[in-house]
Amino acid sequence: MSSSNSNNLTLDILRKAERDGYGILAQTCYDAGMAIALVRAAERARSPAILQLFPVTLAYGGGPFLRFCLDLFVVPLPPLHPLFTNAHLTPSAHNASVPIAVHLDHATDPEHLELAIRLAEKGIAFDSIMVDASHADVRLVSSVLILTTKLTHMHVYMQSDEENIALARPYVDRAHAAGVAVEVELGRLEGGEAGLRVISDAKLTNPDKADIFMNGTGADILAPSIGNLHGSYLSPPNFRQQILKDLRTKFARRSVPLCLHGTDEIPDSLFTECIRNGVSKINVNSWARDPYAKTFGTALAAAAPFPDSQEAATEAFAAVCARFFTLFGSAGKA
Image (cartoon, rainbow, N blue to C red):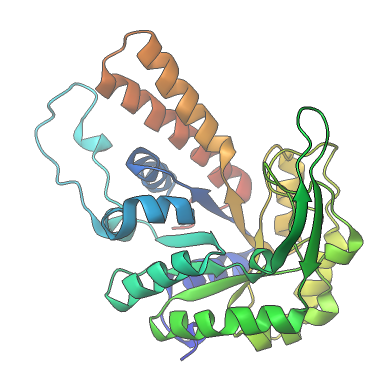
C-alpha cells in the first residue's frame, strides 16, 4: 500500500502547501519543552507544522517520548505558578487544534529505522520518516585524522542510484504498510561536524533522474541537493534554483513534495525563493534550538527559578517558530 493514496497527515499538510504556494516549518525538537513550544506557537499562529525528531532523540526517549509528541494532552488545571496559566497548557501534536505531523529526520542507521517501523507496527507511528540511504551509502575505506589545524583525509565509495534504491525500498514498503510516509534524498548533502563541507556538481540532484528514483524507491517526499549543506556555510550559500524549477516541471503531473535541508544561517530571501520554486517542507534546527538553550542557561545562571527558566526558554523557541510561520506564509492557513 502506498501512503500516497492513504490519509497521511504529513502528506496532507504538504500537499495543501504545494497547492497554495506556502512553506511548512519542519522544526527539530530535542526535548519536551521544544515540542510544547512548537505546538504552542503553531496554535497561536493558526499554522500547520511538522515536529521533527532526530534518530538520536528517538533512541534516547524511545516509544514513550514519541507517544508524548504524538498524543499526550496536558489537561488544564488550576495554575500552580503565575506563569502556568491555562493559555500555556499545550497539547502535543495530534491533539493540537491545528494540523501538526511528527517526522523522523535522517534515519540512516538500520537500528533506528527498525525501531521507528516496529513502533509504527505497534501503533505508535510517526506520520513520516526520512529513509536516508544517501548517507548510509558512504563507506569509509580509510581515514587519517591529523590533529589541530589539519584536515581529515577520507576515501569513500559512493553507491549508485540503483544501489540506493535497493537500500531504501524495503524500508519504504514496510513504512507504507504501517501508514507512514517516507522522505528520501537524491544526490548528497554534505556538512556536519565531521563531514565534508564542499558541494561538487557530481553530488547535486540530477532532475532527469528524479522520476525514476522516486518510482524506484516508492517514496513520497524528495529532499534534493541543490548546494545546501548541514551546519555552517563557510561562504555565502549558492543554491541552484534551476534544480528546483526543473523538479517542479518533472513532477507537474504528480504530487512529490520537496524538502529543503541545510537552512542554518541562510537569509530570509533564500527561504522565500525556494518556496516560490516549489519547496513545501523546510527543515529548521539551530535557529530555534540555540536561543532555547541560551535563554535557559542564562536564566538559570541568574538564579531564576527553574520553572521560570524553562518557561522563558520555551517562549524563546516559540518566538522563532512564529517568525518562520510568517516568513513561510503558513500563518493563518490552519
